[in-house]
Amino acid sequence: MSDALVQVENLSRYYQSHCAISHLSFSLKAGEVLGFLGPNGAGKSTTMQVISGNLAPSEGEVSIAGHDILEAPRAAKQQLGYLPEHPPVYRDASVDEYLKYCARLHRIPRNQVAAAVDRVKQQSGLEDAGMRLIGNLSKGYQQRVGIAQAIIHNPPVIILDEPTVGLDPIQNREIRSLIRSLGDQHSVILSTHILSEVQATCDRVQIIRAGEIIYHSSTKALNQGHESSFKVALRKPVNPEELLSLDGIDHAESLDAGRFRVFFAPDANPDALVEAAVQQEWGLYELIPEQQSLEDLFIELTHSEESAAK
Amino acid sequence: MIWVIARREFGAMFLSPLAWVILAVIQTILGYMFLTNLDNFFVLQPQLIQLENSPGVTDLVITPLMQVAAIILLMVMPLLTMRSIAEEKRNRSLTLLMSSPLSMTEIVLGKFLGMMLFVIVLISMLMLMPLSLYLGTSPDSGKLLSIYIGMLLLLGSFTAIGLYLSSLTENQTIAAISTFGVLLMLWIIDWVSASLSNGHTVLSYLSILQHHQSMLEGVFDTSDIAYYLLLIFGFLVLTIRQLDRERLL
Image (cartoon, rainbow over all chains, first blue to last red):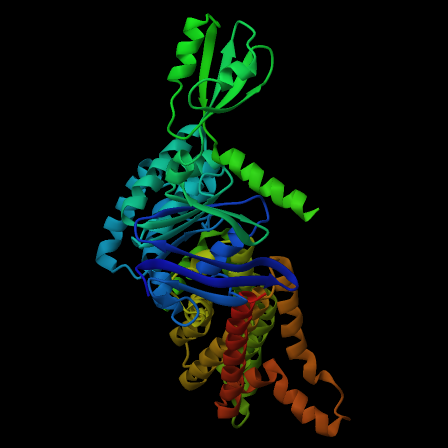
């Protein structure tokens, strides 16, 4: 097989007759961060539960670092760190006790447990919470404990199901940078419905809807490949035709009084527009580049599917 | 690995006041029973001396004490076993064990052993009472050993049944009540009248306290041991299968 760390092939999962995911196939290479996007109930969590061996697939195969999750579950799970939707913590244990227990469960030798616990506490910002009971921690801290638990055995593959839910904006940023730094050495699968998070942390994006992958691309391509558009505001009323006659402008539409959305050909720049505006005294006072964001794409995709279904 | 889970399980019991309260209540009640039995024995003693082959202190004090203990524990054990799996399901912390590199057998055995450690503590504390008799008299050591093993097997089967019923539900109360129901049923199953001459032997073989009785009297019968071991083994296998099955649902 290829160098893929996670290989998912033709994966389907039914709850009785309800089909949660159908015929998913994807793979993840070492050092990649894959963002899993989708509206609620799209099958994100189910997919992650199946990959982590918490649910058995109805059809298809999952292999982690070459180990099939059903045939060699132990070897596969050793390569895997999983943070489920609800952090699987014991409320009656202290952070240190809990992390030690997790370390032992993942077969970390007894003499390396303390070092591993210290490392993950430092990575997930739990240094001063060691003695506290998990039940008394805030949601955000519990979430961090959950993340610490998932990375304690330094697994090549990390699966995080909505890791930033319930965090404040600062913690949120910290966790994102943690995920980014994890992505250097580990492969990470991340599910979320916060779109900016994906753009900020992931190498690749997969949008899943009703159990099927409907979009798949690298975030880099997403940020570049689209034609660029600018929002232009002019003081003097101008006919859109005049704009169209300029160099490099594909298409222009007027929005409201004096405002236009101007589409440029890929790689063109707005020089001509600015020059013309200065020469003809259009009174240019706003020129805002617009990028097609993931959000637009997400809404467009999930929406168009919906209307197609109707 | 089994040991890691067992230790956590054992430790977690003492984190809630439940385990302490149970130990204290049982010890107090049985301590009182023990003193009462001992008192009665002193009253009877002069008459017993005149009998040939008279029952000793073990038969008159310890055996009845442990009979009562078995019945009290039948009511108490469901409270101890109810949380084992149901609580983890409710808190969603079972995922931790499920996504760790462990087999289902290791998880279930770990849980079972953890509770058995508690049971050992419990029985050992009860056995301090008979052992205190060594201060003034000489109880039958063989019988005491038989009683100890008997209690261990009895509570082991209570635990296995409780563990299985706890794996069926997310609700601890339901786990406790159904465990209590099953244990009670296994106790009273041979109370049908002797008129069911054929059925009666089968039913009395099924009765969980019937087997215990003979061990309390110092009769160490392989069929009793086999009964308990089969019960424990059977319910542990059922628990493993139940947890495995849940991944498919």
